[in-house]
Length: 474
Image (cartoon, rainbow, N blue to C red):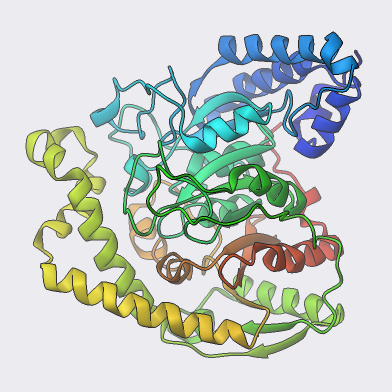
């Protein structure tokens, strides 16, 4: 069974890797070994992993290779779409028998008893868990240096943060550790590292992907989503992840759908609404980010899309509502440990969780009522437009050790509205700053209309090919 050079394997699409494995042009063992070697070579400076399960992964890679040679396969037994392909998980997602620490001393000794539903689905498709990845503590805190493990760093510039809270997921995909990683998104935590690391990350519609076996932060805002280097890989990953799970009370009972079905379709005649006031007035984006979004919109217009500015509530209205719900629900999750072992949390995490203790029941109820209004208004806007486009972050990545910059710039984003409303939102790369840091925009769709979101994202990607650029980490 032939192999490729390790540098070629690092940025191989998971779809192409799976195709080569099925055709016996790529050894699952050699692929796994190459990715493990890459992690060993690079992670000393990126800190993207918390637990590399090398022995377990290699055992499963050997099993995948044996399956390729078996009589059953020769007779036509179907291999899963991820057969022999490594992936990695944010370390709040359970894998049976492996630690789930949430990057916290509070859970440092915790070992998962069962797989999360998303883990089960990826493994049932033939995928191989390669590593558990760094996160901000409990998917909330921020880059902290008073935890048992250091925070992940950005492959494009290791002095900068890679976004969060799925920080390791963004860094691992961008740096070529794995072609696919899962993150979670409560206020933008898949889309932020996707934006900062120059990869593709989607927050699917609320209820599309099960959260069973995922450490909760906010029950009504949490989402699980994939990070990949291309739109096609992302959509194909969602084909595996999406589906009803009766054990997750927020999961929607929907018929299976092919999220790749519109990827090659033209976008001429599609109506795109631009929520420009989010990044031009409510929170003014940097010149680099704002200019890159305008250029990206020009590309979409050149492909025949009809682009027009639209208005909704000010960004702060969404942010305030999201914050009240998140803090109330997060404090409910953490109340016992905050009372009994507050010293085991990072200082920043405690600072972010404790305000939830002082919010009143009436604040929470009124925020839930406001949420319905905001959701319905966004849905009404999307009735007239195929997708909406706005900023993700207002600036590119900033220095990870600059606590003032973190406090000031981390909240400067337009992702939380879509956690609140539940609409699907994807972050796609749109270029680089003068300093060589990735820039990104969001594409937002109607509830459960991920195919349209992917259609627009794929059309833009085909024209620009930012996905072919990789960080200078080798």
